[in-house]
Length: 135
Ligand SMILES: CC(C)(COP(=O)(O)OP(=O)(O)OC[C@H]1O[C@@H](n2cnc3c(N)ncnc32)[C@H](O)[C@@H]1OP(=O)(O)O)[C@@H](O)C(=O)NCCC(=O)NCCS
Image (cartoon, protein in one colour):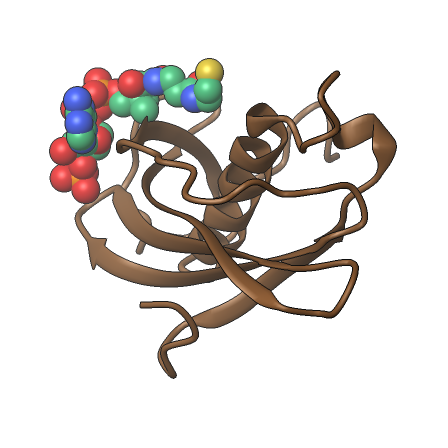
């Protein structure tokens, strides 16, 4: 649930005109991107692996987000497996005018730890993150 004590405030984002669609509301894909990034940050708490997104569950946008609103993304680890971490994500908008807080969406995202060849690995093993991008 929103703002539950066991959720972490994982990221905040001030929405800008470049985040908006032609109708002036924030592009859904922008919010999905923030959800994905927040899920990565939550998974990363379980080890500094390469984490890839394997699954988004159904995402329903319950309220529009307007340019200038401040988005807050909350995360919680909902489940863990061998290589996967399932992250519960809530997104809240704080209105530019008035500061009212509005629930925007909830998503469940599954992240998998992979090795340099893209194969899933037990995330409890020692992370191996060096690659061409991170010598
Ligand atoms: C993630 C990936 C490596 C998994 O490959 P795989 O052959 O299914 O690997 P595994 O069978 O070992 O499964 C890995 C984990 O994913 C889970 N999983 C696999 N398919 C799943 C599915 N359809 N739904 C939910 N979970 C699934 C497995 O249960 C396992 O979890 P666990 O280890 O915690 O028990 C592969 O699907 C992939 O590379 N996907 C693309 C990821 C990516 O690039 N994402 C960014 C967007 S393009």
